[in-house]
Length: 251
Ligand SMILES: NC(=O)c1ccc[n+]([C@@H]2O[C@H](COP(=O)([O-])OP(=O)(O)OC[C@H]3O[C@@H](n4cnc5c(N)ncnc54)[C@H](OP(=O)(O)O)[C@@H]3O)[C@@H](O)[C@H]2O)c1
Image 1 (cartoon, rainbow, N blue to C red):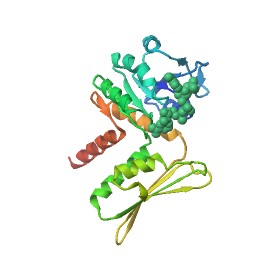
Image 2: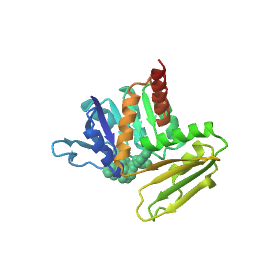
Image 3: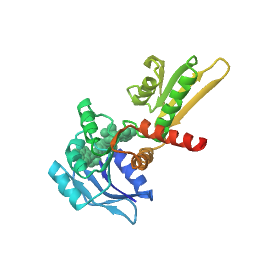
Image 4: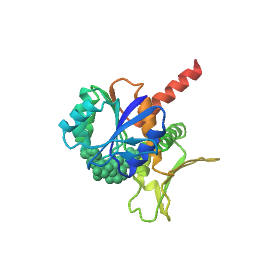
């Protein structure tokens, strides 16, 4: 069982904690957040200690007293610099979901990856990453097909979906091919439509709830464990798995 420490217990972290807690491959040992609080009751039987770790020294002392195999980060970009050296010294795996790393933060994460396994993914759902992988493949197979991207979100979301822009970038399609619809309470709908002369292919992903982030983090931990030290994206882990599956099928 992989022992995990979760960094961040906000909207996403709370959903991720539930998924990790329910997954028999993992033991959620503790949660770090900005403010200290009483242990968190994740389920009727399990409560998890919560620590406020404000300095690198706090992290060293905490990890000595509460050893884990991996950190899962759903907090903010600064946390990486607080736990980074403590994590490096102990060769812990890192699954970071932080969406807003600066180029300097990412450089630092790459530096940590010289000594341990690091995954950074600004989009950590299995479904969206699979959609992007499938869309990239189809784009290679049929570069002549027309492509449109449709994203639908709740009425008050002001900006174009970052995920839709990422999809456009990944398949080399101009961002003006994105159509945004704002309707009621839709959590998140992304659709890539390939128009062939005699057929249409639609790749659709619907977000249902935040626990999908936890499923993604659990997938990443399991796959990262099989990797050498280094820096990985979610695509890297998925492609590695697909290659392995295809080779196993051929053998
Ligand atoms: N990659 C993805 O697909 C994905 C999906 C969802 C979210 N995210 C990312 O996950 C992060 C959190 O999102 P959210 O919506 O859950 O935000 P949120 O509700 O504001 O929660 C942030 C959490 O981080 C904690 N925190 C802040 N600084 C910390 C520190 N130095 N050490 C430990 N914990 C710290 C906060 O502690 P307090 O509770 O004590 O204030 C809070 O629990 C964001 O960076 C977001 O971009 C990524």
